[in-house]
Structures are given as structure tokens and as C-alpha cells.
Image (cartoon, rainbow, N blue to C red; front, side, top):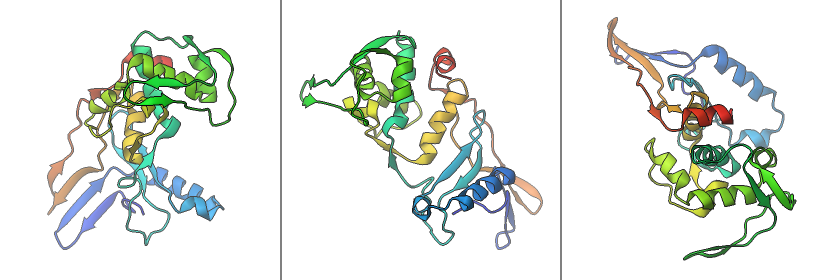
Length: 239
């Protein structure tokens, strides 16, 4: 369901006008794309969110394709990140001495983890380079061996520490985090990618610009200066 059908929402009972951040042009275009999708099954768990990188303002939000569905998947739903988490891992690597040309061998590997035991990640395709590949090549094929080796070299707390910077404290240190074994909401995932687009500065998402009562503003959102989540140089290399 939409956050709002219009950028201005009036509450006649309270005599208030709520001005949201929603951009109607963007919202309309996304709805058109959704309506053109013929595969009904893909719409059942649909969630779309668009944030402005420089402010965190929510420009479009659709929590379900069904207007009668009260569950907002964009905000309240959680999903396992999988390879979507890899940019966080590689950005951390760039901050810690890696370069886009740093090479590691991609081949079937059994890792022995202290207090855990054997860990043998696999590539989704079942294919391996069986030679050294660099970060650019690893990203292009979403290589899980390269990602796991990177995570082990940096430390299993690498991604969880990055998330703590923006107040996400419930992701445990884990060697599988580099492969996205943890879950976050679409809103949170988008806000993290927003920071990458904003040269490493994270802004908390917001939805309301102002609230008026009897033609008088009783609330106005104040833009924050943001929090540096990722080094600027790393974002430039990644982008």
C-alpha cells in the first residue's frame, strides 16, 4: 500500500495538514511500471522505496501492490540480503588497503573457523575461476569465495561494525555476513545504498516535511548533517 496517495494529507478531525515528502511524479511512474508487470506472483511481496541521497527524504513508497493489504513490506518487512550486502564488504575492504585490483584465488575452498568448524561456501552457478581474480572480476560474477576471503581478512565484525554506525545493533559478527546471511527491511537497505550515492554520508529516512494546524506550522523537519558511514574515497572507487 502507498504511504500516501498525495503529497499533502489532511486530517479534518484534528484540523491538521500533513505535508509529506512523496513526489507524485515518481510515485505515478512506479505505479505504472508495477501495473505493466504481468507476473502476478512477483507482485505479492512487492515493496518499493525511493530516497533522496542528500537528505534521506522519501520520494516514493509502496508497501504492497494490494491496497487492501495493511502490511507495509517496505518498512516492516525484512528480507535476507544475500549478495546485496557485498558492496558494504567491498567498501570496507577499500578503506582497509584493498584496491579494485587486489587479487585472491577463486576456487572451491573449505575454511576452518575457530569455534565454528568447517565452512564451505559455494558460488550460485557452481562455477569458479580456479585462478586469482581481482575485486572488479569478483563483483562482476558475484564470487562468494572472494567475498568470504575478504571478510575473513578484514574480520567477521566488519559489516556489523558498519551497521552499528547508523544504529543497527542486532546483526551479529559472523563470517557469513559477507554473503548477506542477515536480514534488514527494504527501507534500511535503501538508506544504506543512499549513503553510498551520497559519498558515504548517511541520512536517516524521513517522510513528513511539515504539519500545519489552522494555517500555522506546528512542525517542520530539520535536515540533519548526516553521519559518515563510508569513506568518501571508497565510495568514489566503488561508484
